[in-house]
Structures are given as structure tokens and as C-alpha cells.
Length: 113
Image (cartoon, rainbow, N blue to C red; front, side, top):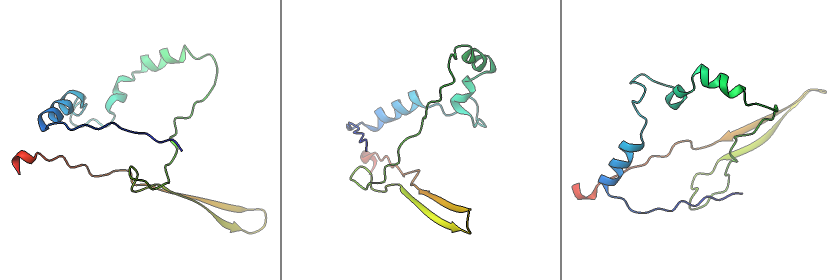
């Protein structure tokens, strides 16, 4: 299992606000946009990309599920394979995956407390 370590340092609320402002793409393509950076993939870009393909090799962009609880993974993913049985030649298998896909992050400026 691969483990990723993130170096953390304290940032002030002003530094955080500046980073958020400089790195955020919110509103870049309008208030009603749902595609985000995918707006940069124009038909011309997609067509040009097909011209550089030489082999039909696929590459997985999947990320392994971390199902081990640890200090940096307090809510690990759940993965279970469940045989549902069947009647003779047909046997079914159920693949269950459960994950906490969003965690709440609270940024507080203690100077205002």
C-alpha cells in the first residue's frame, strides 16, 4: 500500500486567502459552468491530440483504495466482494465499495475569536 505524506506548515488567514484567490478556478468560465477546466478541451485540441496517437495503449488512471485505518486515514474505504449465488450456470458477484468522499475542512482565524 502506498503512503503519501503531506508536509504541513501554518499559514495565516491572509496567506490562505491569497492562495485561494490565486489558485481558484471558481467563476473562471461563468457562474453556471459545470465543466471547469474541461472547457479548455476544444474540438480542435481533441482532434490535434488524436494525431499524435501511435499505438492503442490504454493507461489506467485509477487510484488504489486505502482500506487501512491510520492517523492520516481515519475513515478508510470499505471494499467487500459478496457472492450472491445463483442457480446452476449463472452465479453473481456483488462488489461493494464505500468511501468518505468529502471531509469538512474548517479554517478559522483565531484573531477574531
